[in-house]
Structure formats: C-alpha cells, structure tokens
Figure (tube, rainbow, N blue to C red):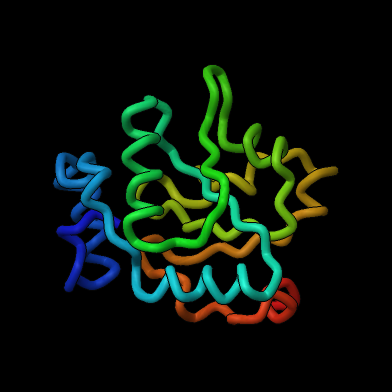
Length: 151
C-alpha cells in the first residue's frame, strides 16, 4: 500500500486512492500491509511457490515494485505484469496459480475488476480464488498452505 496509508483504517486507505490519486503513484515508497511479509515467508517455507502480480506496465514502475518487494524482505518470487495487449486474466491464465489471493478492487469497481472474474471458466475451476478486502491485508489467512487451499 502507499506509505501515507499507514495508521489509517482500511476505508480511509480506499478513500485516499479514490480522492488523492497522486499519493498512490509513488510506487517506490509502498509498504507492506500488516504482517504480509511474514505470512508469505510462512507460505514459502510451507512449500508454496510465490508469484507477484502488479498492475504496473511501464518498465520503471515495474522496477519500483520489484524494489519494494526486495526492500521489505518479501520472499523470492517472480514478479509478473501485463504485456502489451494483455489483461490480468491473460497473466493468470499464463501462470495458472493453484491459489490466487487478490484484493476485492473496491476502489476501482469491485468484483468486475478482479482477475478471477475474467478467467476462462475451464481454467477458473482449477484455481482457488481467495478475495481479500482492499488494503485489509492477509494477516487473517492461514499460515499453512493446506489450510489456505481448503479455506
């Protein structure tokens, strides 16, 4: 999340995105939500292969996102992004994750903007979708991958 969201409620964070868009464009200053780093480390240690997906498409912005992942100690994992002409669904269909954890896109239109919504039905059935509240974090999700998949 953008660094100015620290110390604010989830709804205030969403409001910042809706009404102060300039604050969200400094990608290098992003910080983890809650204990996301620890959660992902737990999943990695439990055998998960971690993939990151960014909405950024410009090379400098993608580099900034990668820098945040590294700077904050997120576990190793490949950072994916949309190639020219691609939508999120294309990226997800390309990598075919077993589990897709994504926010509910509240600030940009909700479920109609979520990746899982647009994945082909024959592929969607192979992906465990776990929506989380935008800016709400993943602290509440299980530390154990088996428990996550079966949640």
